[in-house]
Length: 338
Image (cartoon, rainbow, N blue to C red; front, side, top):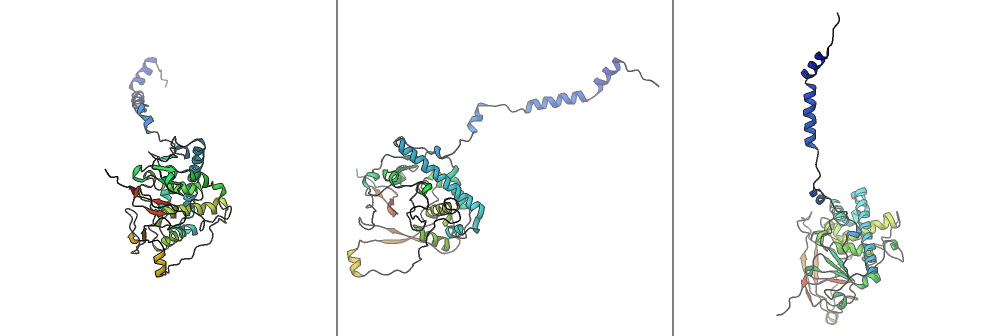
């Protein structure tokens, strides 16, 4: 039997088939789901964060700006190295155990990441001397402005004469344990960044004051070590030396002996030496709960003009000052009389 297909039959089949209407509906739906670019899309673009994005005040001349940019680039390099070591080795690393004890590695990893990538906000590095500390405080190489301007850091001329680049790490007899912590730009600026709320959010503080105290804190109450500025600095420079500068060797140096014996001064010593008043104070990172009942104390010290070699007298224009290395940390400016 033969069938004759006529043009009229083909036309009726095409109209009767549901395929064409379904395709039309589907294409129409697609047309409505195509995203349309808007002017507001650019406002959601994240700015690139790098060493050059640290704001540097116009008071820094060309040479100072170059030195600061190089120092800040070293700081980010140091933070990257510390973070990578923590992520690679975790608590199996001897350096991690030494500086952070049995505390979580997530805390220091987070702080280094904030140094690397946190939005710079209103922070500012400046080379003038708005608070007159560079001019009046002998030995000051820089300072955080505190309540005068919480996001600002002053870099004094002495920094440009003393600080070294990371390329010089482990040279000239330098050791992590015995040399000044702020020998290198990278560590000095890391310390200064931990004072700035835009980076440390007022959680990183000074709970230990030197290499020996940092190791002791990790042994006795490691919950706080991840919030300690010195622990974060010492760990960063130590692992950079071991992983990068002198791979597998480093330059940690000898560990100072833990000497907890306290010998009472003689009456003559007490009479001739400067008076130092000490009061024990519990120091605790905000919102951090110690892992044990052990309490670490620090000492609030009032030091006279000759109490420490190389340290200038406590600033008279500020209040709540305590010595820290070669400079003072102050709570704010002293009130002025009407």
